[in-house]
Length: 402
Image (cartoon, rainbow, N blue to C red; front, side, top):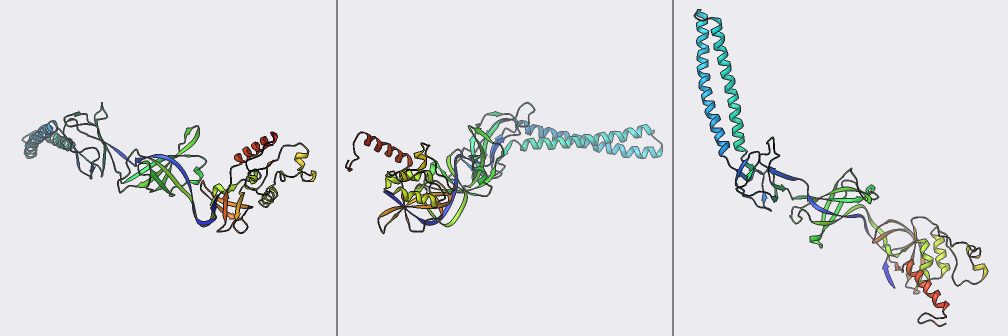
């Protein structure tokens, strides 16, 4: 006989699912410059800081453009100096009446055009210098190199090209904070809300628990025979143990009770199962029937040993099907072992929060009692059928006399 204690403890109810660990945000690194890669000083798994050098693209073409634009700028600046001089002389000559108005206007127009070309050339130089700077690819944030897609010597396309999306150089992510995306059954969704704590057990570290927190419930459902909703749990990974792609089990703590009376869930017997199980524990049927009534249910019949017509239930006398007991949904029967007189008795109980392991007892039991884990109703039914078969053939059970 297996027994369990009735005791007080903190009780946490979980909703459990499986998922895969992933970075919160993954960055695809591309170069705005095109050309041959001269340097690629990072490897997969390297942790880089903000601004660290990731790649150096060939600067030949960009540097040539900068030199050309600077030369153009010097030429235009010289032209502007000359245009300014002509403009000043045109003002004096027009005042003296030595040139026509048209000649004066032409000098002003030449100066304006030269100044416009100067501004355009300055903008072109700034663009060329920017393209030169873009040949150096730096880390936009702190993170870990997850994947490297190119090698030194490879020619890449610019990400700003009109005919190409650019060559992806590598992928990186900050792994100090990770997340798990799990699919939760819609029947459990009403219990989950952002901010709830969660425990994550990675398959790679079965003996260790990681703490997380629900940050989001995604609105778009996924249909896989039943309807699921993605739930995102964020995990603190400053130790760096968790890596992208690890499989894990997530338990979201949907409710918590402090110092409540509990018993193993396996000790609870449903009202419609109690009369089938009781004979296996040598518990009188009338005792079970009384407990069912105390729980607010209706027993289905009296002891199987009854032989007088007064003890035979009316449903059996009338040839009707055996009725199912009725009662509150939070009521059950627990078989309690009394140490004083070494017998087992039936106790009607009411329960509250419940999970696979333990159940909160709100009425019927006391701290320190000993509950019996009964055999299942299926076992009881099979035992009954076996006993009836033995009786039909005139045999007896081991240890029993005919």
